[in-house]
Length: 163
Image (cartoon, rainbow, N blue to C red):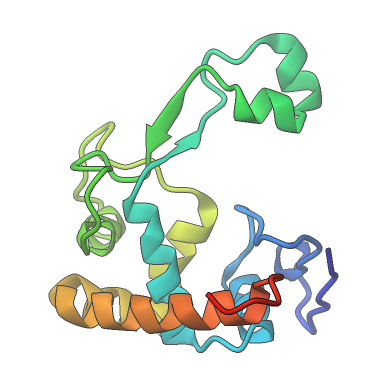
């Protein structure tokens, strides 16, 4: 656990956890990932992992869990939804295409379930450049994701042994 301070005026730019908060703004994302040695293009590439899997939603959560939102409540949430509904079990650049459709207000209800950090990738002009590149070129995304993931592992791994 660490606190990374920002020169910005918004509380959403301050990082106080090991993992980036879902509510970080684009400055907070930059601050978090640059502290790990990643560039802007690499932070956008790493976020492409949201193409896979699902995240917890508060839908159908009990009132007692909603009041306290403990780790147990979140891990055992009754409903998990994909970030991008097209194919949440296949790794591709569809996440970036969906972000651009969302930005253009060209998505249907239930097609995407982005969290604030996802949305920041397209509303921030500097980060949107990389979203557009990865949406157009899946091979580029795969190469940059691979490199960024390796840097992230190298920066955060706690094992002494080689992997």
